[in-house]
Image (cartoon, rainbow, N blue to C red; front, side):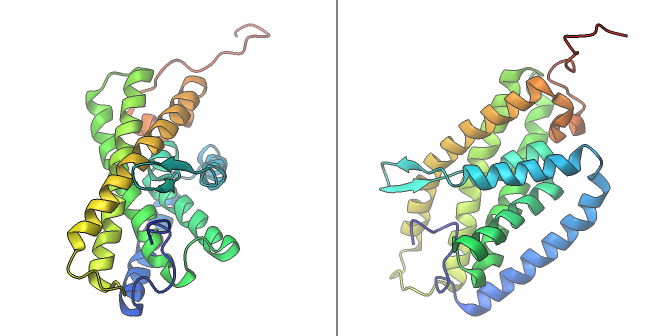
Length: 239
């Protein structure tokens, strides 16, 4: 269960709770589709595809969490929220999770509502709230953007992990002997280290994009805080 805690396998959570969170996930995705249509334009639509593909690819790369004896990988909530916004970002994560479950068996199909709620709803929402807050107070520099991305990614991963703890408390199928606090502690510590890795990946990716094309970073456009001037072609002069 530690290896698949965020990509929840079939049978870990009982049917009624899984069905409840399937409804929650479907409702959240319906809202995301409705609101995301207002954001989509010629710039954001291809960016959403690139973000989903990037998250899918990077999730294949695991890094070891030596203190917990498990490995972690990018969840992508903060990265998606920063680059394409909370609504389209939630849809990107949901698409990645559905493909992983159906094609690669990474997480149970019956548990998709739980996983989408944790990673596509909770993680994205927490990340974007932090991003909106931090971009108001931190300087408009690559360092400020990197700190914003790192903190948002770290916190969103830990909070999403606590979402799984709540779900397990509601409908976990294995008896923990009343040791829910032990599960919460294990999830928090292991995902704290996963969050550090996620924060580094997210900060590096976002700052790289922002230095080249700050107009492609949704969070900067929404905050009205470009990191630097748009790039000017080096050949052909300036008109």
